[in-house]
Amino acid sequence: MPRNRREDSTIQDPSSESELRGIAGVPFYFNPDIMRFVVGPVDQARIIAPEELDSVFDIVRKTHDLDGKIDPKSEELLYLVPIATPLQLESFRRRLSSLSQNPQESWEVVLKVEKTMESVYKAVDPTAEIPRRKSKPGKRDWMQFAAGFDQSGEFRVQTFGNCACMGFESVVHTTLASYEHDRKTDLSLPLRYWVHNVDRKAEMISLYAGAGALAYLVKNRPQPSSVAAS
Image (cartoon, rainbow, N blue to C red; front, side, top):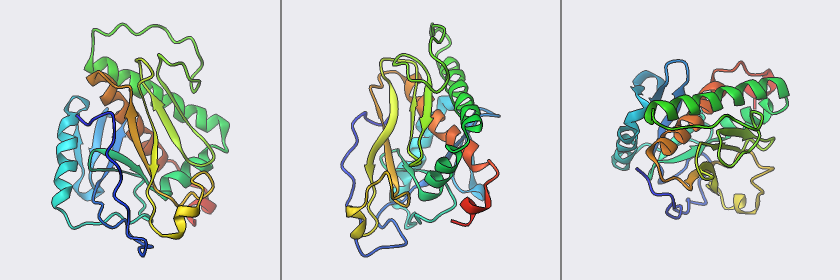
């Protein structure tokens, strides 16, 4: 299981404009319909039960031995990179930004993600006594399941626990000029995410399931032509 505190990112080669040099990883999703992690490219994807999240981390650790490089323009939305850090690419950010313009559909996606996290949590810890939600879906209640995203394409998921969440950690800079860019306005910047205040296995697994489910739902959502062309 990864640590709550992430190691510092390796500074990227500032001459690279098409690759994240030095970083290998695997595409990462969670299919809420079958309640399974989907890890790897479509033609090589492995289907893994939530309780076996550690085996997902093992797959990621092995990417240290790969020569593959993550293309920031990839159509994959979310990767796991060593040390099991979720990495959000431009395609994911732009799709979330577009989705944020549609309040009704955004609410439906958020509700699906929150329900997925709750189902995963209960599957991992059947004895957990989870109180009835007091806030509306999408609203932050520090002890409850919550998900959300904004126009910058940045997301946050929270599970049942004492402020147990996954949120933005750092920007991955792919060019020297990108160090001067604001992550909130430059959606081309890949973002790293990390977990905070996690001390139970069910919290960890449900957070990764929440992030993966959000990516899965957005990836399989029909895209407006303007987003597909960007």
